[in-house]
Length: 428
Ligand code: CMC
Image 1 (cartoon, rainbow, N blue to C red):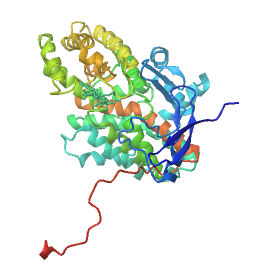
Image 2 (spheres, rainbow, N blue to C red):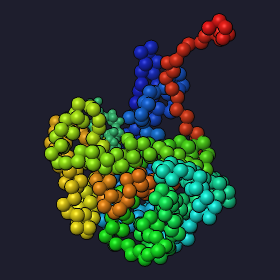
Image 3 (cartoon, protein in one colour):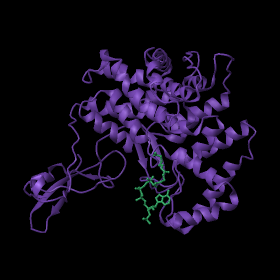
Image 4 (cartoon, helix red, strand yellow):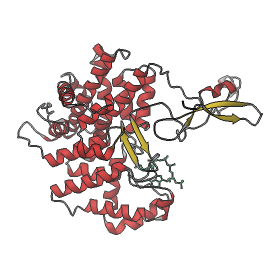
């Protein structure tokens, strides 16, 4: 039997409290501070540097060792041998599907790929130059207005159908956002295609011509989706959980996740990293640019991570994918790829990056791959959102299904004015 372990916290006034120490199956122990309020004090950890916000069995990261597991499976193995829909099944259900389960899951997702025809009208309300992420926040949130039949979050069947609908429809909405931006007609999904293939078809096909997807490029996009599918309690996932903790419907929760993902410190980094490479422009400017980073004029986008203090395992897969895609497109001498590799080499041998434990993250190379696939820069974070949707739903579902969640309500350290009396305007 596991020994009950405790940590004792003693305050400077002599009061003390015993706090249980909890262990997971992997990773560091955590101190359960839920009873701390009994002493009339709280902990202070604004950016969650030292706080576990939940228990989860979905994804594990060891940032020091550079490991990422989905349901126990290393990301490298999934990226090489699995496919995105299988990974979705794994994240949602906890186990890899057998052949029959895989085919049935794929059939169920595929049967929900179309959006309500009324949805197309939402798009014309946006300016043509609206950022596709702005469109995603609005239109995905609007899904909750279309599915009143499945918004009872305490009903597992409702949660299941909502998950399928989101997985199936978010790529369709993403492609519509792109088509609207470029002024091209929407393409309905084609269910003979696989998930990533269909996304490419809806983004790149036109009614005027046949579209034959390139399998190497489809595989690259599928791999990007796998790599971005979940990442435990990151900012957008925590946002989804926080929104969900109030009992909000899943479509609204996912829209809140999309909003949180948009920032350049999170999902917006792939767009920012590519823009950075374009701005540097030439290998000869790498050293000067790195100096600017060290002088804290700007950050090296696609570098650094709150949890990884080693190479992000997704970045290594992405660099290989980048190489494969460029080879397929006969772009081996791609200037941006050469620039990125030189930037990585210079940074990784520089004491600033070594001391700060800054390594490339998934976004360092993903922009080059996405661009080579023909995806415009303003769609990069949208692709991330398509991939992360399954992670958000899995985490949301885990929280709701646990049955013992409460509304998330952080406390604060108040440093505002102390009590004072109202003064009428004439006397101010
Ligand atoms: N370039 C230069 N310096 C950096 C960078 C960077 N990319 N990232 C962190 N640092 C430095 C930072 O200046 C600070 O230095 P000092 O201690 O001397 O003041 C130290 O490292 C710690 O930085 P921090 O901001 O306290 O670290 P954080 O854990 O809060 O930030 C991060 C994590 C990902 C926001 C940050 O590394 C960053 O801004 N990176 C660039 C944006 C990026 O690539 N984001 C994608 C993350 S991976 C995909 C995803 O999860 O969405």
